[in-house]
Image (cartoon, rainbow, N blue to C red; front, side, top):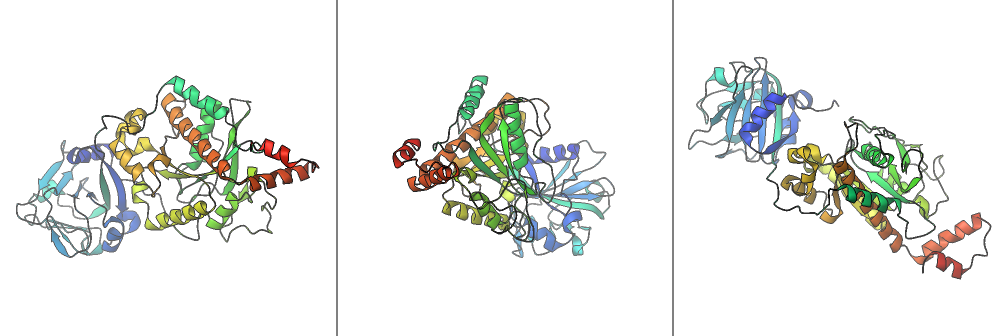
Length: 467
């Protein structure tokens, strides 16, 4: 399926936003992609809260309707004092805004296309509008749509209130070079709680396009000191990453390895037969899948297949799982995707692996954060998006901005990225600390056997384990 993008020009979007206030628009439905039918409209736009319609015609008009109410197919008339019709023309400097007629309903919540009386969109399941001014709303046809009722496209956006900046940040962070250097030093000096493990292994899991590969590239850039693009990243409907990859990060060009391995996987997809398989995910958790294993859409990796690592140690297993979600899309994740996340979380909890939620693209999700990344913990909108995400406690949710178009490193971006890495290492230590002494001793025995050092005594083993 093609990538769904808005047809609004910057000028048209700015004019529409001038009518709506301090909000952002999230595209829910595009008829040229999803179909010019009432069923397609309702499948994507019902129970989405405040929405605005953008209808396009060949005369250069963008016109539509805003409502603060839900579409529910209740077959009842809905009153909404905040509802209005609008029109943006190529020649007009200001958008036209038409309020409803006093005492009249805003729209009829039927199973047809959006019916605002004076304007009925997707009329008869066609790319057309029925115009009947004077019914609920009054306007001149020439001013509203130029007497052109044939649509070239039709979109519906959810209108999301950005709120104001909080007086105080809800999470404290120092935006200084000293803090950045402190975080860098903390990561470089990290030592796992179990001495036989030298690097924490962190797995990135998330939907297609969430920014997993971009996160690794951004972290690698922060430690390298210049922009890098080692992991393949991009925008596509299916996962750009098709292999299981383990990435070691170097501290500077030619420098030593950072005590962290970031593991990247295929993106999650709604279709149960597409994207990362949960059985493959469990094999990754347990350390059985080798680096560069090519995922197979026909089924999970079997124990007797090439690419399956039978002999593993604690160093091969995953010590922390990081779910990566695009903040711009967090609130409209489909139920299928939420169910998939729930199934993964359940399996991860059973294995006792700590979990973090990484929210990417915070600068795109909120214009106030886009203007100044330091607003990320003062943004009412970002706080709401983070607190509503996947049922994960807020103290396990970390917002970040990946490098995507920059050519130079930025201190504030690095600070958020490094703070996220530090938290991942802290959670990895929680995993190590929760391991039984028996499991750790078992690993020591495997190591001793490989080194023909079977004379290592229990006392020495305990000393190595700090117990």
